[in-house]
Image (cartoon, rainbow, N blue to C red):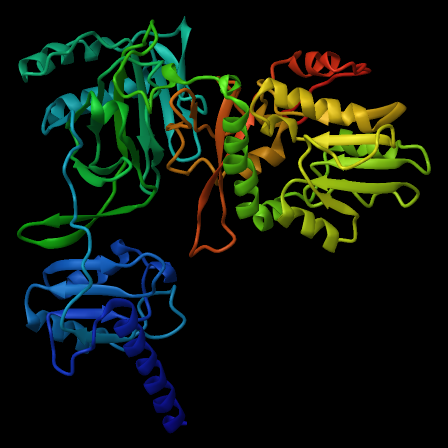
Amino acid sequence: SNSFRKTKTLRKLGKYHSVLKNDFGISPSKYPQKNIVLCNGGLASGISKEDIVELFSQFGILENVVLIAKKSFAFITFKEISCAIVCFDRINGKCYFPQLSGPMCLLFVEKVPNSSPFDSSLPPGSILYKDFITAKEESAFLETINVSGDEWQPLKHRKVKHFGYEFVYGENSAKKNEGIRDIPSICDGLWNRITNKGWTLPWIPDQLTVNCYEPGQGIPPHIDTHSTFEDTILIISLGADTQMEFKNEHYHSIVHLPRRSLLILSGESRYTWSHGISSRDRDVYFDKDLGYVVVKRGTRTSLTFRRIRQTPCDCKFVDYCDSRVTDSNVLQEESAVELENKYVGETYSNIADHFSLTRYKPWPQVLEFVQDFPVGSLVLDVGCGNGKYFGYRNNIFEVGSELCSSLALICRKRGFETVNNNCLSLPFKDNIFDRVICIAVLHHLCTLKRRQRAINELVRVLRHGGRALVYVWAEKQNEEETPEMKQEYDYQENGSAVGINVKLNSIVTLPVTANNGKNFKRKDILVPWRTNEDCNNVKTFLRYYHIFEEKELIDLCLSVGGKVLNTYYDTGNW
C-alpha cells in the first residue's frame, strides 16, 4: 500500500515537472528557494488569488503572487527564503482548500512566470481625493440617505436609491422627463469643496444614484451612456473600502477606493474606460511594507453624482459614443453581406452546440400554429436551428432550412430533413408549401431590401392559400413575459463588451447591447452571447439584430404582396 502511494506520488511529480518545463520554461529546484509553486491549485481549480494570499501570507511577506488563467498552478515569491522554507514544511502535502480533491503539492522553483505588474494607476482624466469627507460627515451622509426618499430598491448584487432622476437599469439611462425627489441638501456643500480642491466643476449635479454593496456584491463593468449624462462623474465611498476595476481595449487597472474618498471620472476615463466592482468578499492589496495582503470587505455605500444631458453628446470619442451610432440601412449590398457573415453566420457557427442546448422548449403560440396544420401538410421551417418545432406531428411532412451548417447537422442527427442555405434564396419551387414558419430569423438581416427579399421568398414558396408565421425581435420588451430570453441573458450581461460601440466601416457604427427584458433604444444592435460549455474556455461572440417597431413587420409583409391575417406580441417578439 505504501509502495503504491509512493509510486502514485512520483508519477504526479513527474507530470508537474513536465508541465512546468513545457508550459512555463521553469524547472523545479532541488534546494530551497524564495519561490514556491502550488502545482495542483489555481484558477482552473476554483482557487482565487485571494485564497492564495490569505493562506501563504501567514508565513511571511509576499513579494509576488502569479496565477495563470485556465491553469491549476499558483506561483508565490516570499521576501525571505526562511519564510518560504517554513511554509513548505508546514503545508506541503496538507489539505487546506476544499476545492482540491487531495493534499497540496508544493515545489521550490528558481523563478516564476513573467506577469503583468499589479497596475493600480488611475485612467487618464480621473483623480482620487482621499479623506474628502470626515468621519463625522460620513455618518451624517449614511443616516440621511437611509431615511431619505423611497425604500431601497433591491437588485441582483446590491440595493439602490435614486434622487433627481431615476436611473433605468438595462438601458443604462435615466428618465429625463420624469424628475423625482431632490438630491438631499446635505450634499450642497460638496460642490464648493470640489472647486477648492482645484477641480473646475462645470455644473451642479441633478442626478444621484446611491448603491449599497454588502460583502460579496459588486457591479458589472460598464460605461455610463454618453447621450444620457454630461461629462464628469463624481463617486464618494462611504462605510468601507473597495477595489474598482478599470478596463479599455489594452489596459486593466485595479484601483483602491478608500472609504470617505472622492473619485472623479472625466474625459477619457468617463467616456472610454469601463468601470466596475467584482463580486467578492475579499480584496488583495499590495503594500510596499507588508507585501500582498488580503482585506475583507465591509458594507459600502457609494454616492454617484451626475448631470442629465439635454443635447446629443459631441465628445471626441466617437467609437464609444451612442449619439454617433448609425443605422445599418445605409450599408451597400457588399458591406451588408460582410456584416451578416461575421455577426450572424460566423457567430452561430461558433456557438451552435451551446445555442442548441438552450433551445429545447417551443414557444406556446408557435406550437399551437404547428399543431393546427391540416393533415398531410408540407411544412417549411426557415431558420429551423436545431429543429425544436419539428416532431410534434406525425401526419405532416416537415423540411428545415438553416444557414448555419453546424445547426443544420444537429437537426439532421435528430432525424429531420434539413437543407443548409440562406433564407434570401430558398432552394424550392414556387407555390409548393402549405405552411411556412420563420421564427427569430429576419431580424438578423441588416438592410430593409434584404428583409424584403427574405419575406418575398417566404411568399414565393407558399402555395396559393397557404399560411406563414413570422416572429422578429420587438422594440418593446417585457421581462416577465420573456423567461427564456431572461435565462439566456443572465450570463451575457457580464460580457465586458456591453456599452461599447463597434465601428463596422467608415459609415456605420453599432452599439453592443444586452437584452435583459428592457425596451431597446436602438434599431440596429450587436448582442453578446457568452458560451459556458467549458468553464476553462469561456468566449463571447456578437450577434447582429435589427429591432422591429410595432407595425414594421406588417408593412414589410404588405410591401411584397402578402396578406396579414393576424398580428400579436409574444415572448419579446412581433
